[in-house]
Every structure is written in structure tokens, then in C-alpha cells.
Image 1 (cartoon, rainbow, N blue to C red):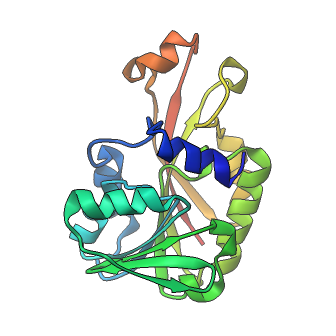
Image 2: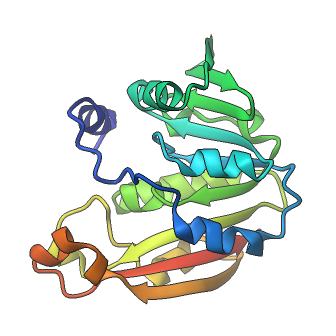
Length: 216
């Protein structure tokens, strides 16, 4: 799985992972991070998620990272944001009120990009990556984030042999290994297979969605 895979998904409109509404889990559990609302929030692999708008509406400045420029251009056009584009180092950058959206390879991020980030919202990044890339992704994140960060993480857990990813299964034990040394609290855990007819039709027998509060 490489950059071309995700570029093709966006170009072909194969974006079943995109949700047409704000994630209710974000709305329900974000207050548990006990933020003031003025913090900068990182949303890795952000796509054109409506969650970006919700986070901005809470007062946060939103730093998104996305590989596909078409996703960010669609986000801009669909919400009339009139983002201004520029090129800075390895990234094309779209800026507007409350938004700084970096278009490029997540693994090209440097510490200065995340210098003001206090919190992370990961609904679609960790589960989008195969195991080896998940390790690199988390190592990069933990290495670059300033001290004292908090994260709201949403994962899916299912028998991986029952279907190929993405989204990939990320069991609880893996989350705890990846974020070893951090405080990890499970806020919610539910089998949501009944809400995902496509997965059920593929023969899956369970689909557990977990919400974590992780803090450094």
C-alpha cells in the first residue's frame, strides 16, 4: 500500500470511508479531553471529513494532513472556504480561517509542523494503515508531538482473516503496545456490525469499535 493507492481511491471516488455527517463519537467523547477550545488539533489523513468543521466550530485551529490534493480541494469547494494555497517545503498548504491543511506525505512531517499541537483526533488514520506502517505512523507521531498531548482515537477490531483492509483491524493489545508508556483509557466499546451491512455481507462475524483517550 503506497501513495498511489490512496490517490487512486480519491480519483475514482472510492471513498466509502468518508462519512456524510460529523462522527457522533467525536461529539460525544471530545469533551473528555478537557480542552479549553483554543488549542490546535492535528487530524492526520484527514480527507474531506466534516469532523474538521466540527472541531473548528469548537474554537480549535485545525491542522490537517492529507495525501490527496483532490480531497482537500473538494473540502474547500463543498464548504465555500476559499482556502489560499502555497508551497512550503515538502507540502502544498491550504490555509483559511481556523484551518491549515498540509497536502503531502505524512512521513515528511517535521517537529516544527506540530509545534503548536495540543491534541490529536484519529478516526481514520491508524485503521487505514497495514501493521508495519502503523508502527511507523505512531513512532513518527510520538516523536514529533510536543509534550503533554492528548488524543481521541477510534479503532475497529475484527478477525482480520475475514476481510482484507483497509480499514484494518487494530486490536486493543496493539493499541497498548503502540502507545506504551502513555495513559490509555477506553471510553467506549461496542460491536457495530449490525450498522455495517457491507461488512456483514462479507461474512464478518464481529466488528468492535473502540474509542480511546490517550495522553502523554
